[in-house]
Length: 507
Image 1 (cartoon, rainbow, N blue to C red):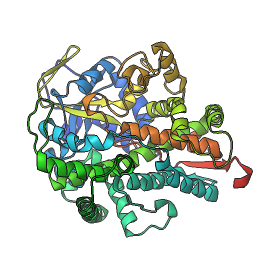
Image 2: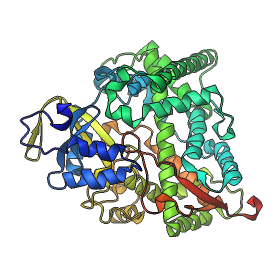
Image 3: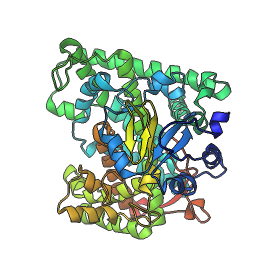
């Protein structure tokens, strides 16, 4: 208990610390808000030095919102390694759920995972991939339309979409017929991000009551994923090689299994020709789980935040609507072609600004493999270092008036650069300071699914502004301040929105 309030003495040059009780108070207070935690605790503590010690995940670690320090963490991957949670505290739910995978491994094991997973993500995503699910979403919104539980609807949409694109499975979440499998999926996702267990991971060592039930559901979920993989493997081995057209429409799991079978026969090598370790069946399962669970929830949370921002800023919502209509026309059934979706790339300014204000990922953590100098401080080997994305992306030093929802921040950078380079750090930043915008992380460990996530939000934004107008109900707490979770993946809490169909056909 003493360590909870007083960090152990380290010869680091005197890095200041945030008292743990402050973090705990703002994390677990009634009507929580990550923005409140950011503005009342993190940003004030980081204002002078850009580096503090903070208590999280049951330990003291270093926290920064300094973009230059973030740049080092993102780019020096041999010094700042991923925290291998599954090896350090293997009993926590998240470690048991997805163990070693592309997101958690380092060195040759990471490269081996990337050799399997990378090719599956190096593909285009036709707009037609999304249509069936978005047509269902439209029907759901038309049926409910008043005081819609936005997060629930977004999660159902992304569960169906990610189930289809990752595993080729239709969960039927938007049909609102919730069987045992769907209930297990919800429980596994919720259990992985429960704030109490993120702050006090030791509690997972002896799970009781509802938590024990979640661990039991996780075993069922593992069996479901393993069975899905085995069935797909048999199907793949029994047929001819996919054509280019089939490959472009195949689910990610099919492509990963193909790559896995290839490396089992021929091996995988790094850029220097070194033979890499083979991915195990368990690791293939873990990667499937992490892409499905993390991808589905992160995308749903990002969509929910964006809908909230546009409800609070009807002028920007209308501007986006006019832009979409200028490309698609105003036929009630219009849906973008691939070419039209590319023409609507400027909608990404809205997506990126929402991700700046409301980063779904709260922070990016690494562990030091050697001592590191940051400013006047020397951080020891073995220390955990985190980039606090909320404190960095809401830092007025990088984003003047950070409380404003201003997509033109990103337009200004595009104009300054003289062209549109959607994959360049400077174009994405919305700030003159590189690496101050990093909701998907950056460098060699950047989220492998970031292009799919941005495309998903672009096409959903285009469809929604074309079909509906929306606003917050009278008396909504979001009219004055956002209520959100405070750690892990950040989602809005009890966000309700009123939708109104735009076309007479929908009335």
